[in-house]
Image (cartoon, rainbow, N blue to C red; front, side, top):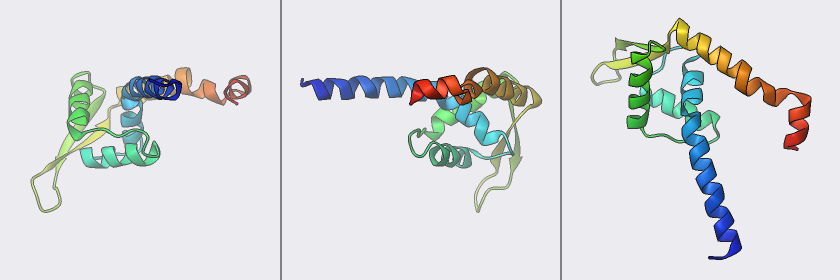
Length: 120
C-alpha cells in the first residue's frame, strides 16, 4: 500500500469514529427548536453537517429509543402525509439542559481565540 492510501485509510477511520460520536449532538441540535419526525431529523443532520454526516433511519430510531428511555427525548403521535401516524420527537427539559451543558463544556471552547489559533 502506498503512503497516500495508508493516510487516506487512517483519516477515514478517524472520521468514522468521530462521526459516530457526533450523532447525539446532531440529533439534539435537530430537536433544539422544535419537534421533528425521523426523516426530518435525518435531513437536518445531512444539511447542517454539509453532508459529512449521514445516518440510517434505523440508527436514529435506536438512538431516539435510548434517549426516550433516559427521559431526554419524548414524542407525540401525529398525522403523517397520506400514511400512518408519525412520531414527532422533541427534547425534554432534561435533554435541553444536557445539550446546553454539553455545548458549554465541549463546543464553546472552539470559539476561544487560543483554540482558534491552534486550528489555523
